[in-house]
Image (cartoon, rainbow over all chains, first blue to last red; front, side, top):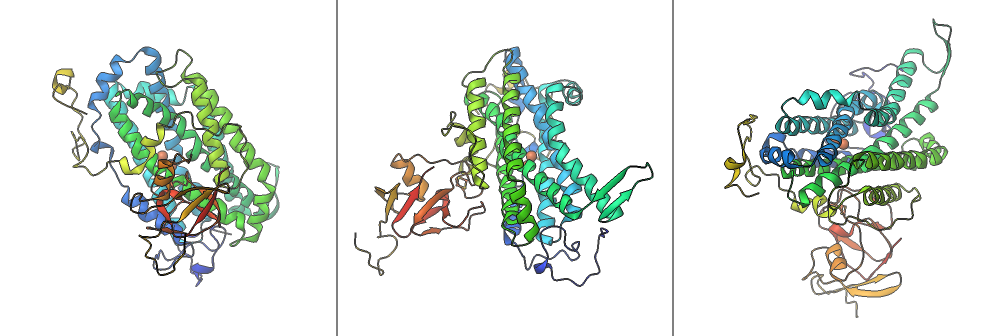
Length: 377
Length: 97
Ligand code: FES
Ligand SMILES: [Fe+2]
Ligand SMILES: [Fe+2]
């Protein structure tokens, strides 16, 4: 099955499955097989924001006054988020677009990935403001062992899917001997399995992994520190809630088999593997919490509380897609985080937020405490 | 409570049952959503977005009907509701896990 950017097949897109049918030809949205993806596109577009709309200049002064162990917490989270959004800004496009068969899902994936590039741009906006040389932070992302461990597990599912898709497109189903002498077996079912597990791992990434960093960002802001950053993280969190909802819908449609009966069988086969993806990520995020707090906790948040939050949120997300919860915890140890996650308190309209460089994109490097004395945030 | 089908929704105050216990009457004059009413009556409930797109408030119902002001985006199965963006239109029984 070769991918084509414009299939000549006179197919009815309403009869195509989400994945592995004919490639999409006409991008039309007057009719949808799954209106939910059209609604997600609309919602994501209505959420549009630009990092420059949020004034982060006071954060530099806050950052300089943070004790070293809190600077470590702040910077490490930014590095980890930068990694996650670097992956998310490209991978849904590269891995999923060649397999999609309905226009509303294709465009949702593109819209989704585009919003991730905004997240990445916002980290540059934040980092440029707090340090003289952003390279110090960015360069460490590909060196830092703690971050690399996570990168491998997240990008692994995408990379395997991309590679399996390539083999399927190149050789088709069956046994093949490569020029290297290696024999490979290509099967559509195995490829579908990789897709299912990849979407599962993306759900875990967006529904659990991000929330450890979110918690730290909001914990700073609860103390009126790094509030520019928290405003941005709030906008990111709002987008991520949409993204995790979208993968929950995909998982559900696949598991229901309504669109591809083989996918329903695969979902049953992968039940235990799916649970393990959640368990593994939760353990990894708890280990991350321990790395964050290795030199000391922050007010309102320590390793134990953050780990309990990871367990709580893991349970919530697992139950959302019909998996059993795996932790005893049923209470959210940091209920204040929900105020930050609630959208009715998110202000986005540029006239409502404190704007310094709105649509200018310039960073004023000479701001100091005195300049901010008559500012109230 | 008498169920008169001619009652306007605004004057009807459906009962909310939780785990089989009569918990409170929903009053649309006082609360915009079932979630707000649950909070006011100290019924534990999860939430994040409070706008129907994250799914954190997802709750299982045994019976009863709700009305959504806007079609929510979050994924729910049959028998599940999103209290953050709905109002009960009949007596309703909620299950908590
Ligand atoms: S709180 Fe997000 S859907 Fe109800
Ligand atoms: Fe993101
Ligand atoms: Fe995302």
